[in-house]
Amino acid sequence: MSTEQDKTTGAAATPSKSTHALRAEATAARAQLALTLDAIEYKLNVPKRMRDQERLARRRLHKLGEENPTALLGVALGSALAVGAAVWFALRAVLDD
Image (cartoon, rainbow, N blue to C red; front, side, top):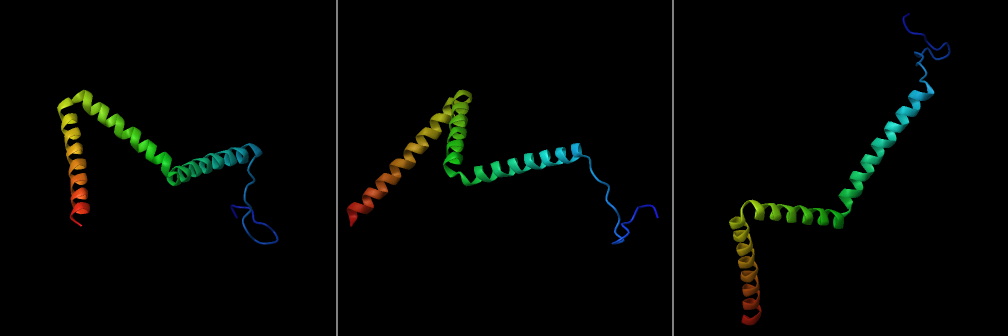
């Protein structure tokens, strides 16, 4: 036979790994576990994700303002119009009752 077999069970004997190889494997497994735990923590940390999204939106608006100030003005006016309309409809609904 090409592989050695255990005399008691008949199973193929597995080659033993060196201590160095086992330590390297354990280190790699720990690193992978740390990455997985970091990803889970980030996914469950809603306030941190909201801060990250806020920073991203600010950067995008700043970049838009530098590249195309007219478009930024349009975004600002559109936002103001939307907020104004929402307030107007809310007040109208409250006062009509």
